[in-house]
Structure formats: structure tokens, C-alpha cells
Length: 78
Image 1 (cartoon, rainbow, N blue to C red):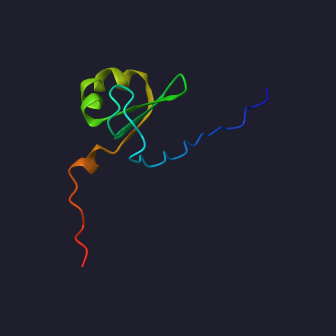
Image 2: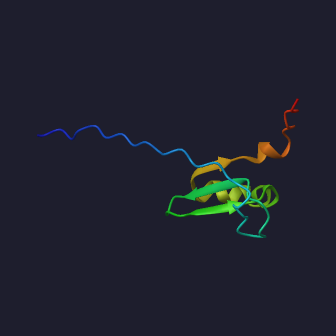
């Protein structure tokens, strides 16, 4: 019996979200990208990401979360 070669998969890192990325629910700036197991993606603001978080986990293949950016303090410039 012939053995199958071992297969590995690599997921490409998600591109950072920008101010142009908008929430699919309300149009606010998106801070969360959900890559779906069925293909495609959804973008959410922090509010809608929290509101729909449990359901999103059920359908997500990968979640790119940048909500931490909302609480980061900018670095002062000299």
C-alpha cells in the first residue's frame, strides 16, 4: 500500500485593517475581520464584534482582531 505524502497548510497573515475597512453591520471603522469557513470574510466594528462574538466563533476559520487599537495611547512625538 502506497503512503500518502504528509501535507501541511499555511495560512497567510491577514493584512492590517485600515480606516477604509468598514463594519458590514453599521459602516463604522472595522477592527475585526472574520474569515469564514465557507470562504469570504466579514468586517465588524468593536461594538458589533462583541454583540455577535459567540455566533462569529461558530462560523469563523480565522479571526483577525485589532480592537486593542482602541485603547492604545499614541507615542508622543518630540
